[in-house]
Image 1 (tube, one colour):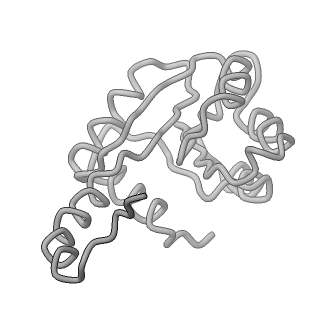
Image 2: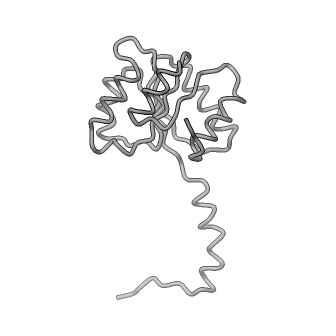
Length: 152
């Protein structure tokens, strides 16, 4: 029986490659939004921030909730204004599933009032981002939320 042990000398030569592998890990992102253009905007922001993200989108909240039984994103971006159910109702449904309680949810919408933001945070969102046509403010907000620097 052969054991795969490496010496400290071998490890010191491998350490930079191990660090690089950690740095290029993909972050899994799910966007629940009925506007298909929003996925392109988020992907552009992540690319400019040098965040390697595997982004996917669900148009229908009901389909997204079902898909979450199989797919566990690192971050879930959730639009508030959707035709059938709004983002807060969708967030409530997501939080009812024990396996999904740890998914980091960000409410991402064009019109977020203080009341909506407060309710989203009470339901377990880590923050809210208002949609914008400019990538710079979006990237700043994403950076704060995804590095855990959000304070309501």
